[in-house]
Length: 246
Image (cartoon, rainbow, N blue to C red; front, side, top):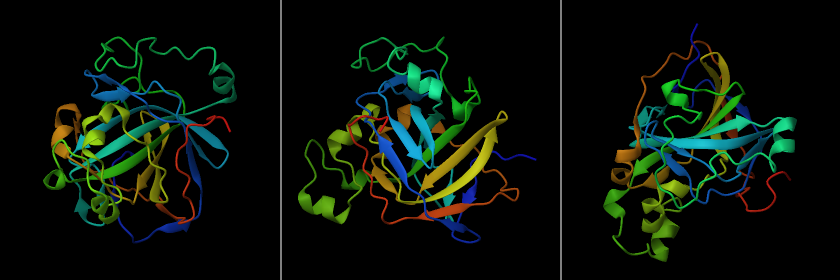
C-alpha cells in the first residue's frame, strides 16, 4: 500500500492536536540548483517540534499547488525540506559544515554532481527522517506595485503579502512558523516523511517563480492515513537569528 504525497486535505475527519513548532535561524541566501530546480540552503535553520530537531536543507516550488485544501487548488506551493538532526550531527555542526564552500552571492551554481535532497523527483534522498513544511501560495500579481514598497494599509489588509523586493529575491525566502496546520505521515522510497501543510496561505507574484518551479505531482490516495490538525493560536514563535541550538 502506498503512502505517498500529495493528498487531498479538508476539515472533515481530522484529529485535533495542540503542539508547538519553533524555528531558529534565517535564510540569508540559498543557492539555486538548475538541474533539480531546488534552492539549496547554506545557513543553519532549525525546526524544533516535541523533542526532535530538523535542519532545513533545501526548498523548491510547484506550480500549480500539489495539495488541495478544502476543495481548492492554489496557484503554487513551496516545500521546505528538513532533515532530522542527530546528536552526532549537532556535535559536528560547527566543524564540518562546509557543504558548499562557495560565496553566498552566487545565484546559480553547478550542482550536477552534488549529493543533495531532491524529494519530489525521488532522487538522492537522505537516509534520515524528513519533515516537509508546505506553504500554499495565492497569486497576487494584480496587486503588485512595480518598483515601490507596498503602503502600510496594504500590509494591514493583507498581513502575509510580500513586498516587491521580497518577491524578487526568492533565494532568501522567509520560513514562517505555522500555527494552524495539517499534519500527516508518508514515505518516499521507504524513507519516513512527515508533512506539515500550513493553513495560512501566503501571497506571491507566481509569474516570477515560474522559471524556477517544478510541475505538480498527481494526487495520491489517503489509504486510511490519519490527518492531524494543529489549532494552536498561541504558537507565535517567529524565527530568530539567535543560537539555533537553544
